[in-house]
Image (cartoon, rainbow, N blue to C red; front, side, top):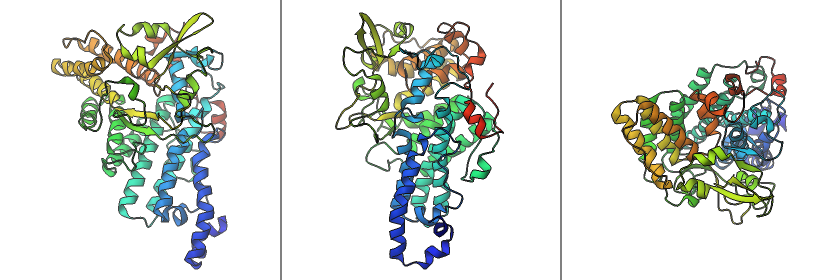
Length: 479
């Protein structure tokens, strides 16, 4: 079949009916391969199609099939447990920070900030994002070489660029220097050297600018499970914040906040449901292995029953930092007693299993945009901007009933500390925010020394797994 696909003239020589029959047999296999490719952790680029496979000749000549291949990127993110985007990044980075810890020994290297190139699971944090990037590159190339309509090409290409930027965002923030894979040439990509952090951010930024230009405000599906223009702007606002482009971070977040489709609901139990008004982008529940799973975080963290040992335990220092009236502590964490000892575990996701599905994995939500804008305004640092930053923080504190409200007369240093604290409370356990915040603001040593004796600047570096280093001799350790 590869020879048939390689030779476009043979395809054209067949009658349309025969070609469509061949497509019907092959395309589901191709899409399935894209969808499950992120499961493997052994190779650098699992998702790249064979060199002899001409994607555009078959997959991307049909709009429905091309769309299915694009949607396959999201299936890869959320189809199986213990994967980069299905809760594992959130879990590992939250444990590495000071959100919560694991009650058994499985993640001790993360809890103790003693990560080595041999540490379990680090390979997934590299290979799985790259697998999804491979899928995105396949979509971008396939669409470019297809005969699809201009509007469909723009939609699918923009989604793929958004996903590629999303994956590179986490790769560069975990490993600092990473290879920039932007096509499907396996022979070239398997020996690429690492690009600088700035070069990676340049690609991320351009991909998101392109996605903003190409995506519409309307979602491509009935739910918020495929990115739209506001999702691209939301991620771009975060990128501007991380790269210290304060005015751009402020203005871009403001565009998202101004969209009245997104709201800060007063009922905290609705924030992570599949119908949440706060959600900007979610991952559709597509689990293929365990009946009833809504989100893999919920499945992992919610105990089987009220008598078992809750393994994901929030640090007491983290709990003590909340205001006593803060509903985020009361509603987004749950106490369970085991062996006479009370533990509180993260419970933003309430369901271990539920049928029909109630919750989706929430990736981007409105509260983060208020936090981005507040931090950008605080860094601009004028009295007027600091006052506006405090107003943004108080929107979230008011929703949570966190008393008292913050004063608008804070100094710049106090305003930035207030932002750090509010991000800690609001984004607890989500997508590694706490870890990335402490590292990017150079606060990790001061803050995490209270958790891990002897925490130093070198502990802020996440090592590249030794098995990954073996796949490409041009890769250098992150030390």
